[in-house]
Image (cartoon, rainbow, N blue to C red; front, side, top):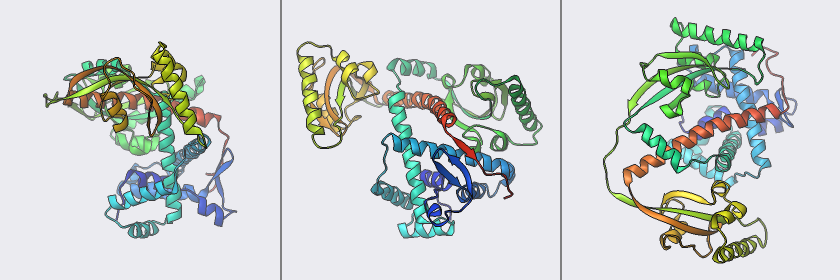
Length: 433
């Protein structure tokens, strides 16, 4: 029986070593990562899971030593991310892990006991599964926090993207990356060029499918997924590739081209036209800005936050500029640089408490302090409008797409910085296996 769920796939790949470290203190170490270690058993188990996923197409996998290197790099990055999450206060409770396990079981039409039995058949204990699942949830929350603090998409960006996409085509793409280090030497550049040319020749001669070549040779984090980049519009494709994409047929490949990360090959898997849906009713949208004060942990935190928001509201009532106070004092790191501006949103988008306050205001009016799960707020309503429901949905999708693209670029850069700053001593690979 194959258990299919995003958490489970990630958990199987990044199986933790808590139990192994407790029961086998002398077990061989595959890598030292700062003050932590990755055991050889973790690496072996993760590699075995990848091989199992490719059971019917093992010819696509690289040689064992290359696969071990790819998987070990993933394990190293997960170790670094979970450490960073813990250092920055990201937490996952036991109850949240229990809920995730129950959801996985339900998704696969299993009871929790049946899930436990299936894991045992796959050679994983429930303790190892819980530990690896917690790691994956920590990484997801770290990424979410990163997005909230670093990524913003303006209405102007959404307007421009929607105008560019009207009646346009989107493209399903895959890529192969031969990475180059920052400040690469001429010798490293020549070696990278030689490698990408060799990979291209294999695909051109049809000695290897593009996806198989990505698994075997790509240095991209999505190599083991065949280099799949998903669906993208022209404005989400590097300019060097975008012009050529328009005239390509599915299955065709372009490159190699050199980018910030190294040499790339790009394949068009499929293209589709984006039909514009007709009107199907309208909804009220609000444009507002807010100031958030998050209570500090511990006794007195909530009362201190309430006192602070009362003071800020009094300053606004006295004639102080709302946007200036938001930039100075708001704890919402995403809207703070924009003077608390939240853009256009529907009443329920930020929760019923927030939406109820906004809907009861007049344009230009500022609310009294009120509390939500995020903390204490004051909100200033700027304007209202009636928006087509379908248009609203498309805007949300476009905003999400732009945000995800920005997040991909920033997150990869963040991971490279994290990896470069870490102490990593790789010990695996000196013996057979």
